[in-house]
Structures are given as structure tokens and as C-alpha cells.
Length: 123
Image 1 (cartoon, helix red, strand yellow):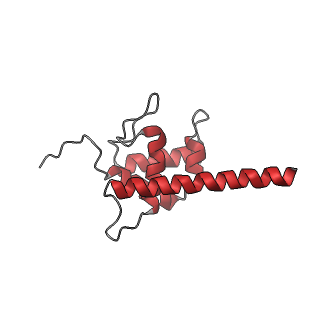
Image 2: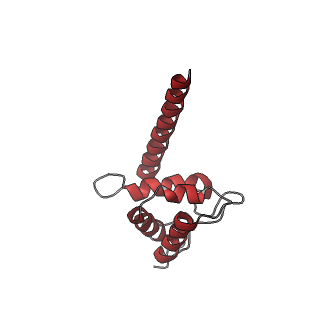
Image 3: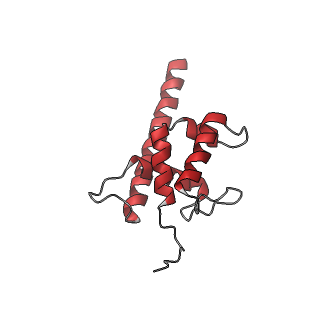
């Protein structure tokens, strides 16, 4: 019984991860944010998982804070702080713990340089 339960849980987690990756890839492709060769980068996949709570506009959903409008350095510092120190309140420390320092730098750069919906182009 225990082995069946463990298998079911691991299959469920793997299935959930596959759905998340597929959703991330579709979102990046639809938004035209795949790289030049049409490949989805790890930073894009991580960023698209952020949108579940923080919305694709970067404004945040309900009580979730915005993730748009931060510099690369600010975003990297916040993610690194969640990874190293946690906050004990949200799930962000658990998310950030799963990212390498390189992942954090790359997703911070991606989010900081992203064209958010509703942004006005100054040109």
C-alpha cells in the first residue's frame, strides 16, 4: 500500500511538473518571448511559473505583490534573500530554494528586461 501511495504521489508531482512546463512553453511562445530559435529558456520557464501568483501583467493577484518594475539587481537580491533567509510566511522561500544562484540571476534579468503588458513605450 505504501509503495502504491508513494508511486501515486510521485506520478502526481511529475504530472504536475509536466503541465507547468507545457503551460510555460505555450505562454512564452504565444507572447513571442521565446528566444530567436524558438527555444524556451530556463529563465522563461521560471518566470512563467511566477505568473501563477503574480499574474502575467506582473501586478500581482489579490494579496500577491507585484514583480514588475524592479531592476535586475533588486529582483536578484529579493530572490536570493528568500533563498538564504526565507520569510516564514509565504511559499517564496520554498520556490527560491529550488533555484541555483545562476537561475536567480537569469530570471531576475529576464523579469527586469521584460516588456510588461500595459507598459508605455517612451520612443
